[in-house]
Image (cartoon, rainbow, N blue to C red; front, side, top):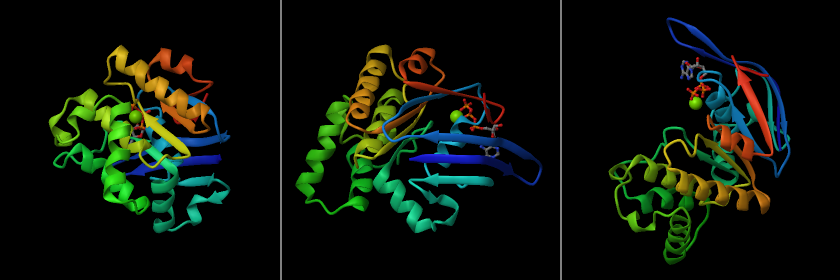
Length: 220
Ligand SMILES: Nc1ncnc2c1ncn2[C@@H]1O[C@H](COP(=O)(O)OP(=O)(O)OP(=O)(O)O)[C@@H](O)[C@H]1O
Ligand SMILES: [Mg+2]
């Protein structure tokens, strides 16, 4: 499903250059359950953004389902992200001024034409699963950090992606909610979803079937 060959990523600003990834080689099969760990600044989010087609490598080749991401145009990449990939951002990336319901409805409407009633049912089902259905009509910016995290997880799952990429998905959750989210991920993985979790949490890393450790932009 995923193949990175000598992938590099350099962030350039006027004042400086940061080599966030310095030659990453990685293959991930469909159906894997993977944790990515490593110190702060080691390149975990950068790697996840590249895998999720949110950003392109500076060098090397990234193939997603055998297509070279460098050769796809922005529309192709947007379609892949919307249909095939669910992304839980480290800082959520919700639209704070609109309702939680609407935050989930937008990606759903881009993917497929469902009747409004059906959309509502799909959204309420997933919000119920992550335990936040009672806040569906709240503005996303008006709920707690842990609640926003669960909305972000629900949004990532709404289009039933083949690949779920999550950046510290349990970072703001208490142990009960963490367990709940991890068991949702495990169920989805058992049904065939490929799941990648960036985490600082040793417990979460041990729970995954494979762990990838990054240090200074390289897999160690
Ligand atoms: N947009 C950017 N512009 C410039 N430098 C960046 C940018 N994004 C990340 N970096 C730098 O790239 C390196 C890797 O960052 P990245 O966010 O991938 O780390 P991380 O492993 O996810 O860290 P954390 O655990 O703190 O989230 C860091 O040195 C960071 O400062
Ligand atoms: Mg990060």
